[in-house]
Length: 431
Image (tube, rainbow, N blue to C red; front, top):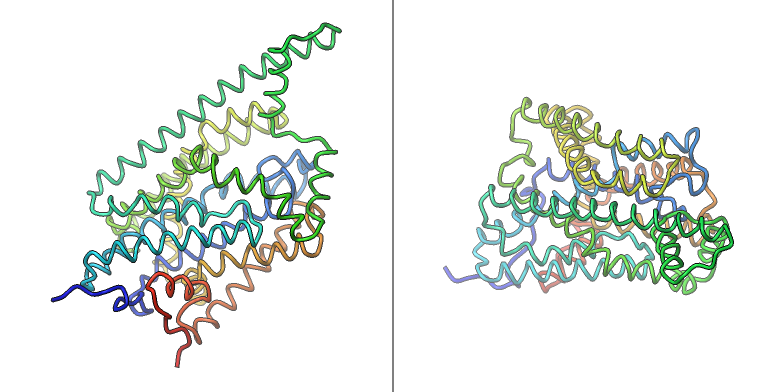
């Protein structure tokens, strides 16, 4: 049998898909918006509600629930599914006889995904885009696809450990900086002339502290109310930072580690819904027991210190561990939901959302950019009011995704991505 060319290889059709993966992908896709909406609609307060005074009532409870259950976990779930998709894609291509062209298809797919991320950041103006990171770190995965499950689990354990050690180091470093800055400020208040080292200590702590003055907040909001190109210029430094230093400081341990977990979980058949109810129940109970305990400790540390920046760094030391276990808890819970077969219409809608994950994800950026930047609502809503937008988008996508897929094989951006990946125009509309 002669190897196929890339022009003879077609993407997966509906009947070959795995329903459980689609449903969980749909849940994760919608869940990501729970956290992203804070960055899309509010200044400087993604993780710190005190910046805008959101420390009481519904604003506080929304932040509290997100920190316990959703911060980093929906992204973690989405990333695990991405890693599983690597094994799914390459295995199916090999079975189709693609041979060496499997690598050709795979790397085209990653490079185009990275470019979609650039579009989402620079054109749709969402600095928190995840597609760029997926394309970037996805380039590393192909040579590891045939590793044993054991080795696929060892790699993320090492990566997560490195991230935790770095977080501990950052806390200790910032603790020293704050101490030096406080001593310098005491001297300054006595009227003493500060030397260069003392001035640098104050400047370093101001840079490390996420707290912003009302003037800085007002200035940032005003910067979001200009023309399209004014807003792009205003966001450019953040986007540039997110696509450079941020990737190597955080994403290597956050995203790449969970991609390897996804590859291992796919080989273990965890994500297919094929394990026992007891297995998924234990996964949910153990994951939530450990993860939520850690997350509650972190939240208590932050709120008990009245949102002191140093205590935020202290709480972040265990962030990766709490996030990991809560994500595992989510997998167990969602798999139990899928295996139960309850609320079938919702599961079918979630699966459709998951099959159109790229289009629906980009739609989040497009809708919120129009709403918050185009209509001038940026910084104007309370934290809890942002969730009126979230729930509206959820309802819209849960309704329209199944309808769309009745008439088309793919979402519009999935169709474009696959056409670019396979080097030919894909069949789009169903006859």
